[in-house]
Length: 163
Image (cartoon, rainbow, N blue to C red; front, side):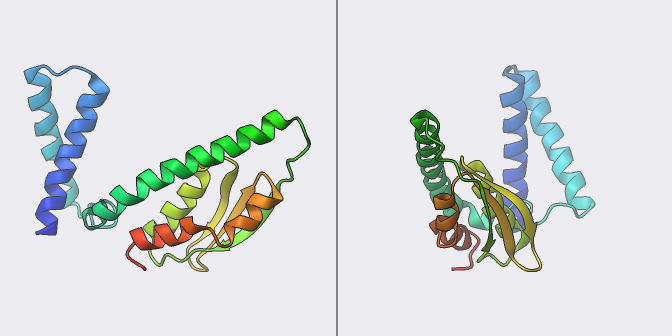
């Protein structure tokens, strides 16, 4: 059942993305987007390049909970970085820290590293899937100290099905 749902959702997402980028919704373009999306998904299926890790339908509901939380964290972090910039002080103390990722899958570790990078004031510099470690550059020492017990790690592990 998941395979059929995954393939159908892939067609819908690809066709929707095409239509979104084109900005035109003529009958011909809608039909062409659906046909081409079906062909692309069929090709990916035949070549065995579409799998559960590339399009994890099973994790959709968890992701629907995680993404709004991540957006809120991005807003909070952006406000913090803005405060640092506007304070005029030399409050910036760049720091590099190593964080242990709680996720077991490659997509989970990648999601965590990308979530760190999306949050203003932090950047994932290096990711080791084997050691499950991420090196993070933080704009301040306080931010770096908070990364070790960051709830984002727990959230992504939950979304990845690890917790």
